[in-house]
Image 1: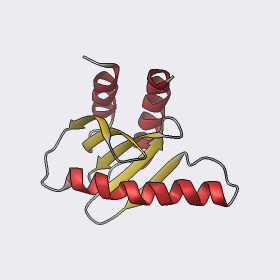
Image 2: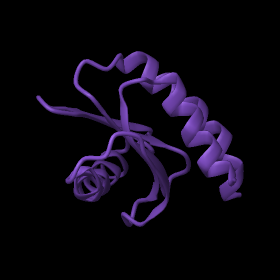
Image 3: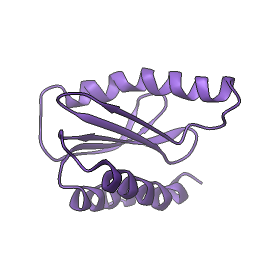
Length: 120
């Protein structure tokens, strides 16, 4: 198994509300994914969040705020967390409503640090 796959499985084990985890580039291309609870539209949702991610990266840079480190979107049916691994690569987590965001954010940050060396 790859470091990507192992790391995603560790996140899913720590965050029981996980539905989908993806290591992806800012271009929206997935490098590795783990589908914990299949749903028809989760991967499409992740792809659509790429445009929001690109906008967030541009806004942070254009306004002098630095690199985007994290983006979260909470809706009635899903929590989406995007956490930076590098400036070009992010972890996307699709979580069930009611997920403990602090625990999920921590697990994703730890995973991002672990995966960062894979991109060097």
